[in-house]
Length: 196
Image: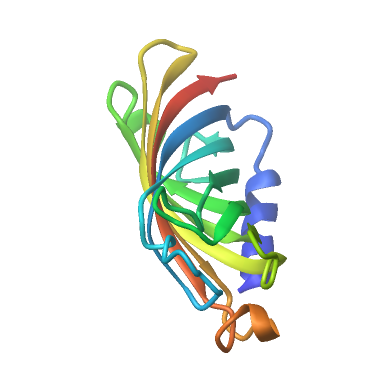
């Protein structure tokens, strides 16, 4: 799988210089929801909705393929307003993705749909009041999602994004997890797109 991703990235980057491409920078806000984990979650907070912030940098050709990087952070992922055990927590993800999108000539004046997916790191950190099982770990993970991009002007537009994140199976973290580490969640985001 990693070899296929690397080959796809090289193919996109090695495209002829005559092929015109867009670079997009997209700061986003949204919600993290539907979380499930085997990590110790004393306040039962991971299944709740939490606000998140993210930024995506994309390189899209005029054709079908592109690449992107996404950095996402959800403060308070292991916390709820009524919680009593977790003092501070954060969930972060850094992903490198391959993008498949509709050719730009088909969507010049409409929303341009896309799907993307790839691999990266998911970081979990939480500090409990008694610091008995406080955690700070990096986990291998992947994501898959999609959405649409539309432009109001030549340079600015909007991006809608729905995405699934999960850790890779087979990671054992001893007392911080009930068995192998399993963490998965969804994000829904919207943001501004700046085209260069």
